[in-house]
Image 1 (cartoon, rainbow, N blue to C red):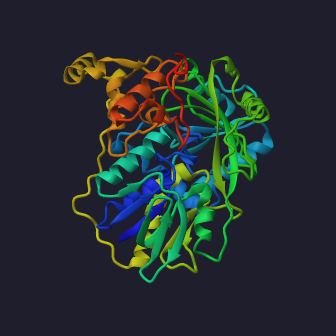
Image 2 (cartoon, one colour):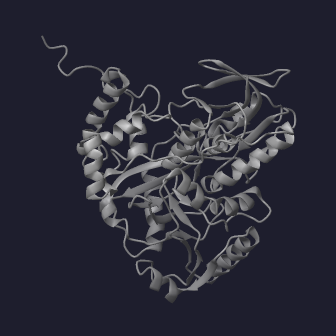
Image 3 (tube, helix red, strand yellow):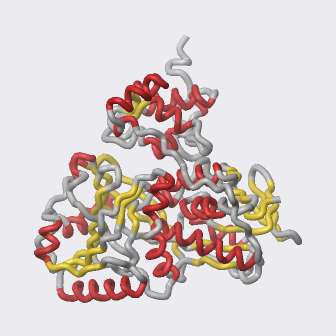
Length: 480
């Protein structure tokens, strides 16, 4: 019997799991995918919003500003890449300057520190690559960029280190109300639990509707992106927005925490919760809009395009509450942007709800907040590199030439407590395949290493999701 079962291991589920691991509770983290952070969390803008966008009084407004300020300590404890580069919202005419004023006032009411409205001259002095056509900008010093995959994986690893039980590839097919709480039935097993926290993202409506008569609907909103090579990663110094519209915060141009340049997203409401394809219309739109923000847009340096899906509801705010007709069943749904930025504060908010329901939850005395990251060989000094290779020669063998990732790093990623099992899971942990060739050279070697370390055939290695096998058998196997 678990005390708490969290359904969904995206950044929200993993953040709540890590927070719950600070208490004397038996916690289960149940995920239908074969890795954590493998749906909405894996495709987003990778930024930490300051918190001026959301209307004061909303959960988004409260939790974004609070969550933003928690990232410095969290990322130090978990050794996750995070930089407070600041963000700029550009205005191109007098009406948009009025919008900046409204955003500034919202930010002040939401408790966002260090907000400034800047003149055109000051903005161009700060970043000369921004368009000469602007009239001014809202500068938020606390805006940041982060590795969302690394953050989610680190949260999960630290939660497991502190006693959380994780069950991947377990798709919830039914939930039964019981006298003791709930019985969660998956395609693999059953899990009895006193309380349930529904963090199922795009499928939070399906999970809620299994136990509650107050039906919920999640609307998938697709956003498409361009990712550009590191040679143009310093095109802009800040996260560059334009004024928001009814479809969200709009197209941004931003450096990534790993040194690339990211452009996007658009916003398109869909029905299909698996529609992760990109479209020429969507990509052309984000390029057209982004060209207003910066003087040049070197699209010849693009190395890939991708799309992500955000979980939207008609409420236009986060839904974080106990279901009125299902005691002990807490929905954490509609976590669209700024969900990543709000994740640490959302986890505290959920703990408070649980405390009100359970009445007594005791803190754990031996909680360990620290998680050690996999050593990044390329970032070490020569002495540190030599020392590491002396201990393990696999750190002296480069597998991914674009990102200079060694065999030792890949092996470490596979054997951690939430270890990589697929080619893309390795990519999310150590960036093998994230460079200019997008895995063209290193993917076959990564497959070999995965098969060897996991003790399986190479044909059993998947690219990412369940069933995404890459190899079918030996070349020319039919030839005698």
